[in-house]
Image (cartoon, rainbow, N blue to C red; front, side):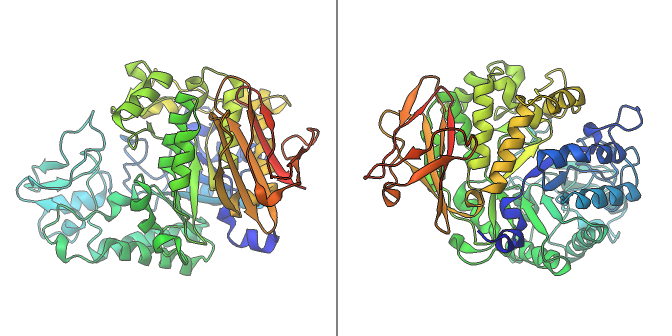
Length: 527
C-alpha cells in the first residue's frame, strides 16, 4: 500500500501505549513517577515501536480516584512536574515519531474543584447549573452504580447546597451538566488549550455517561447528545486535522456504532475516531478459558465495519478491571474459574484485577500467542504499560491498583538484552504489524479452520492485491488447520514472523494443511 495513504490516517496502523506518569518512572527518588522520569525512558518506547503515547490523567487532584478526580483541567499535578515538563515530553516524543494523547475526563470533576465549591455555595452562583441538582432524590433517575462496592446511589445530598447532586461515579465526583452551553464551551476550551500545548487528541473517558441526560428535568427538551459529540469532534479537527478522539464506549456493537457518528459504517466518522472493542476483548478471554476459538470468531463475524476513516481499538488489558460485563453470567463464571477463581482476584462481580501473564500461569506460549493475536486482529492495538515485559498484578494493592503498580524497570532492562525475551517478541510483532498494512487497512474475513481445528482462530486480511492469513491456536494439543482460500488457489504464502519457515503452498482448491503445535501461531502472506 502507498505510504501516503497509510500515513494520512495515522491512527489506522498506530501502536498506542497507555501509561500513568505517577507509576511509570521516578526521576528524583521521591517514590512518585514524574514527567522527567518518563522523558528519560522515552527511548524504551521508541525501541518498542510505539507511535502514540496515551497519558492517563496528570492534572491536579486530591487523588481519591487515581487522578480521575480533577481540580484543575488546565493544570499539571505538581508531584508530576510542570507545564514545561509536559511540553518537553511532547517535543521529545515527537522527535522520536510519537504523537501524544491524554485522557479527557469531563463527565465529572472532583468535589474539591473550585467550580463545585462555588456551585454549592449559593443557588445564585454562576456555576450552580454547571452540575445536576434535584430538590428530592429522584426515584427514576439514571440507573447503574459504576462502583457498587463503594456507592449505593447516584445521588448525594449536599448540606451546604441543600440539594442532591448527581454522581455516576464516586460521591466525591459530581457530574458536570453537559447540557449547559457554558459547560460545553468550557470543555472545548480545555481541549483547545492542550492541543495548543501539543497534544494530538484525547482518549475520552466514559463517553456514554458524558452524553447521558437521564435524571434531568428537561431531558426530553435537550438537544441530541450525539450532536454535541459531533460539535466537539468538529472543533478538534478545526484546530488540528490529524487529531483523534479515542472513545471508551463499553456497549454492544449496535449501540457503539452511533458513537462513530456515521451510521452502518458508511461515510466518514464525525464523532469518535476510534472506539475500543470491549466485546471482542471479552469474547477472546472466553475463548482462552474454553480453549475454543469460536466465541472470538463469532464476535468478529458480527462486528460492524467502522466508518472509512474510523477504526476499532483492540486491546488485551487496560488500566481498569478486566471487565466481563458483556458476557452472560454463566460465561463470566467460566472466565472467573479459569483465570480468577479467588474472590480477591475479582472486582465488582463483573471483572478481574489481574494481568494476562498470571492469568495464563506464566505460560510463554500462550502469552505470545495472545499478543500475536492482538497485533493481527483488524484494529489499532493498544498496550498498557508493562505488557511488553510480562508484568503481573500486585494483589496486595486495593481494587484496580493491583494492575497499576510501578513499572518494573529492572525486568525491562534485562529483557532488552535478551533476544529470546517477551519484549523482543513484542518488538517483532510491532515491526511485523507496521510492515503489513493489510492488517490495519485491509478487508478482514473470519475463516473456517477445518473440522479438526476448532481451537484455531483463522482470519484473512486483504488489501490491494495482497493477502495475509493469520492462524492462532487456543488449544494445548497439536492440530492441523485446513483453511480454504479459493481465490488464491496455487498461491505460495511466506511466513511473516519467521522468514526461515518453509512457505505454504495452497492446492488447486485453495486449501492448505498447516500443522500447529499447542498455542501455535502463523502469519502467512502472499509472496
